View 1 (cartoon, rainbow, N blue to C red):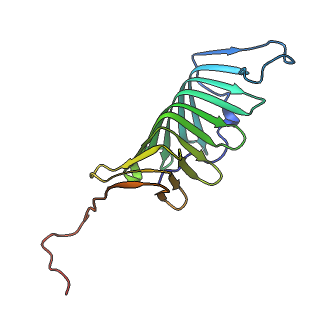
View 2 (cartoon, one colour):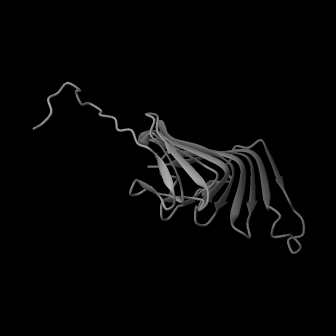
View 3 (tube, rainbow, N blue to C red):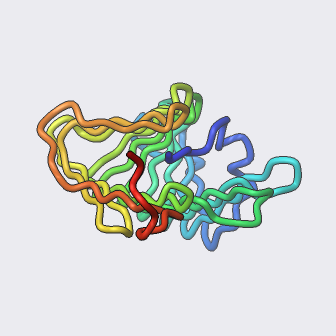
Amino acid sequence: MFHFISGRVCTGFLILMLAACSFDYGNQETMDRDQPDIVMEEVEYMRMRSGDPVARFMAEQVQRFEERRIMELRSFSFEQFEKNGAEVNAYGSAGSAEFMIDSGDVRMDDGVRIEVESEDITIETKQLEWRDNAHTLTGGQEEPTVIFRANGTSFSGIGFKANARLRTWEFSGEAGGSYIHDDDGEDEESPAEP
């Protein structure tokens, strides 16, 4: 199942490769809570663990709000690595995202698509929310979520929720679709058991 980045993504966020950056050195007392403390353009952030890449995040624009402890990202995409950073296992994109600095939670919006290679699964919906501590991915209560695989399996439903630790997903509301079972490794001419 899909496993987003655990831990705190922001600790090294200032070690970013970026094309442009602007700072507001205005009067701190009059600074509006809705005004970003830092705006970064064309951001790429690589998260490392023990010298190996764990994830790469890219965004057209990032606005960081220190008092609210959030970052707002526009045209957000990511890749998650496995096998000591040698292979990309999951990747996705969203029109926008909001990252909670302290919790590591992420809310993706404006069209979300996530592909997980190891599970051969693709998720598409309008919005998804990742809860880092619980390792859960939740869709909008009224928004349809589509899940499909390369073999033709396809489900659509309302109230999508996935648990990355348990590798399960479910719909709480109306759902439907088709499941195609692949008989990997089974010989079609083998005799049936009595």
